[in-house]
Every structure is written in C-alpha cells, then in structure tokens.
Image (cartoon, rainbow, N blue to C red; front, side, top):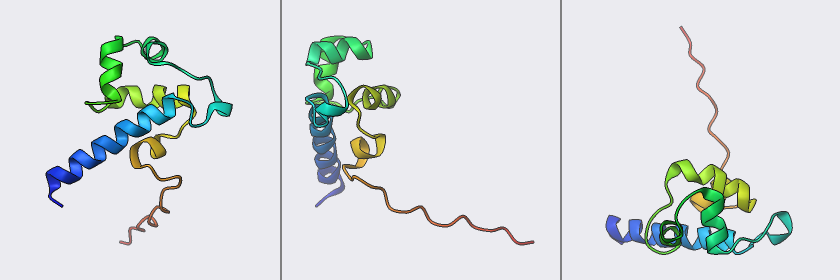
Length: 95
C-alpha cells in the first residue's frame, strides 16, 4: 500500500468514526445529535460539518469539543483504538 493510499484509508476511517460518534455510538453517555445539531453545537455551518463526515478531516481545534459532546475519547477518534499503548518510560538524564 502506498503512502497516499494509507492516508486516504486513514481519512476515510476517521470520517467514519466522526459519524459513528455523532450518531450515538455511546448514546447512553450523552445526547444524540443530527448533523444540523452538531454543526450548531460546534459553531460551524452545516455544509462544513457535513464535509467532516464525508470529505475533509475535522480541524484539530474542534476535536476536543466534538469529543466532549459525543462522549468519545480523543484517542479513539484519532486512532480507532480503545486503548493507547503504554507510554515508553521517561529517560533519566545522567550527568
């Protein structure tokens, strides 16, 4: 798979997670939003929000608010994983 194909695949998967989060993947944890409602909650025009589910990546500045509204984690939205791998240990600087 080429780098371009990997990028397109990632963007498609990310956009699918945006839609899944909005439509209530965790409906019991938060309210359900239709597209116009989510656009209004994020403070963006409906046509722009619609593109976030189909053609364009959601801008970084909207991701935390979107995740809060939909009760999904930023890590899940970005990676699709339910858990991130453990962080490597911090390096201890020795002098």
